[in-house]
Length: 238
Length: 97
Image 1 (tube, rainbow over the protein chains, first blue to last red):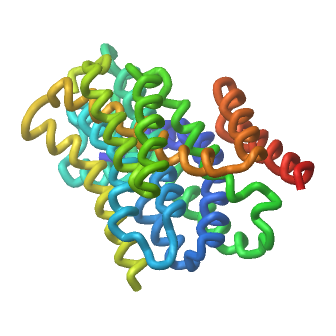
Image 2: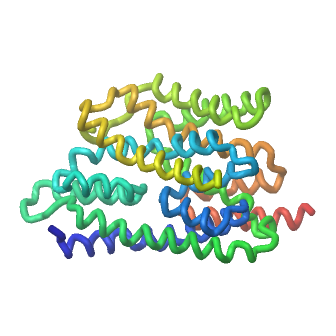
C-alpha cells in the first residue's frame, strides 16, 4: 500500500538532481533538433529510453542513412551498466510486487539506482524505518521523469532557433559531456588502465580501419583488460 | 519510419538492460567475479572510444578546450565543466579565425 511520507521523501531526494538533469534535457533537445530529429522522434526517444548518456550517444551517430545496428549496439553497450545495477538491487526489492518491480525498472536511471541503494542502507538495523519501498522509488521517478521529458521537448521545440550552433560550441557538447561521465567512473578498479588500453587500441583502429571500428575494437580491448585484471571490489552480495 | 523502429528498438534494448540484472540474479544467483569485472569495465572502455574521434580529429581550439575541461572536470560538476569547456572553445575559435 502506498506510503505517502516515503513518496515525498523520494521526491525531495531526487528533485535537485531532476532540476540539474532538466538543463541537460534542454541540451539534449537542442542537439537532437540540430541532428535533424523531428519533434516526435526526439520526444519518443527521450520518453522511451530515459537514459541521458545513451541518448546523446545515439544522437552522435544519427545520420542519413541511419546506421541502425551501430546505434542499437552502442546504446546497448552504454546502458549495460544497468545490468549491474539490477543485479545489485535485486535482493533489496523485497517490498515490491512482481508488477511493481518491472514497472520500477523502467525508471532505473543512474540517480534512481544510487538513491535507492542509499535508502536501503539507511533503513538497515532500524525496525521503525520502512527501508526501500515502492513509494520511495516512484517518488524518485516522479521528480525525474517528467522534468527530463518536458525539458527535452522544450529543447526540441526551440533548438531550431539556434542558427549557428558552432558559435556556441554546441557541436562540442557531446565530447565534453562524455569525458565528464568517464571521469565519474575514475574511482573504479583499474579505471586508468582500462581507459588507456581502450584509447590505444581505439587509436590504432581509427588510423588503420577507420570509424566506426575504433569503437568496437577499442571497447573490446578495454573490457578484456578489465576482465583480465579481474576482481572488482564488491560492496555487497550481488 | 525507419527512425521510429530504431527508437522502439532502443527503448526495448534499454528496458532489457534495466530488468535483466534482477532476472539473472534471481535465476542463477551471483555473477562470476570475472564477468562482474568485465561488466564493470564496459562504461569506461566504451566512452573512451567515443570521445577519442572528436578529440583526435579536432583542431587546436577543440584540443585545448578538451584539455581544460578534463582538468576542471576533476574538481567541478558537469554543468560547470561544460560551461567552462564551451567558453574556452568559443573564445579560441574567435581568436584563431
